[in-house]
Image (cartoon, rainbow, N blue to C red; front, top):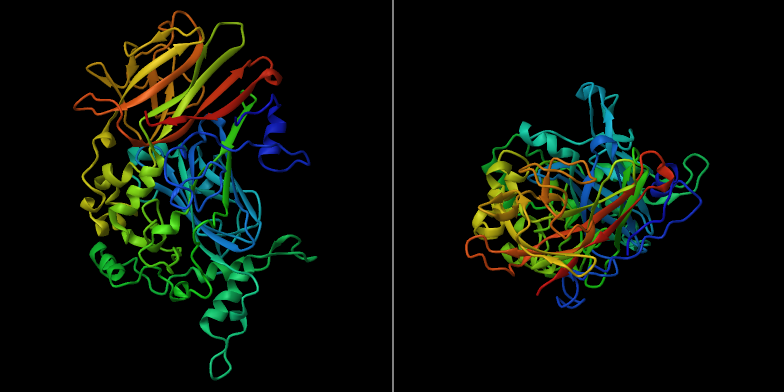
Length: 539
């Protein structure tokens, strides 16, 4: 599943960015999340990889690493999707934009570190776009007093509203993509006029959104017709930036959910309905210094829009504060928490399991080829509960303040510290149970505490131990070096448990994978990496 043959770093880069005539198949995920859960007609994880919402469990830009992101529209409609990049410690929103995908379109970007003159002389995390598909909220630039769409190819991740201690975590995190609306081609509303023969507002909006469609012309071959017109559609009707939080909340409570009147036009911007799951995502983690690359599919949530309070309502929002905060994974019932805690609970139920199962390896020796594996465990809904106090000073504070912490329930026990036990096996069926050392831990109880956690398997040296292959500031470690009868590899089960009672089988919405790499710094041609999704069990 989800593995790659040995390739050179040059080939990996070319293939991952789509710049080669060769093709590289990425198998669909078989991670077991969909098994035994909701039927395909309901909100559920889709094992075929198609959905109305996508979760990319991890990105990393540290120490030269790069992460490629591919988002594909498999439908004959224009699909508008919100992309939110969140740092890995507390899930602060570090970049928030809207991508408008024409029929059968694909958008590709790369997260990496580059020097940006306006941010000093040290490299910072940036997003680099690899094509011309229309993006709103990123890559624009003020030119001659006009905010010009798609004027640049590099967009730094934002530090605005993010506390200084958290900014160092922006180099790692996770990404969500949520389909907001579809626009059908050939809609006769394009010719709609009022009694005076003037095009109606929705006719103008429809014609503007068609600017996202790629055209073949000598001037702009295979590029969208007019991204500027598309971008202008997302300008908010009124500027709420000067209002207090209370004033903004009152405006939203008054029914101004979208920020743009035309977004309420159901005849133009239609919500996705059951079984319309057009989005497919893929990602690749590249390590140029080791000559390794591995990739996989984004986790896909089917029928995300099924449970909206107003069935005809789309999830479109202006790309301006505070409207751009929505939608999130809590928006399956509608914008701004219309569906209440029940909407978020549906998503969490689809993602929940009591146990993660995957492989591990830790083999290091001087002068030989080494192999290591890291587990990435991401909790994509954790911040809805645990970080309200931190987020209240940032963009997400408006949403949290409006919804109220109680709307999402009391902070769940696993949110602050997710405790777990380990059943680890070597390759000869020998088992090390929960006596293995780990960090972080309290009184011998192992736990993870970040929204994104990178777990390594070498000798434990206390908190912040990182023995793995992924450079990280979000480490945890399970010491399997010497505790598994001298064997360097095997498999293990991580069982979530209640921190107060010590009882296992606590259901937790967790996603992630194992990143395994074999590397020889003296011969990059023999190096490779692979990503294997966790098996999710509800035993």
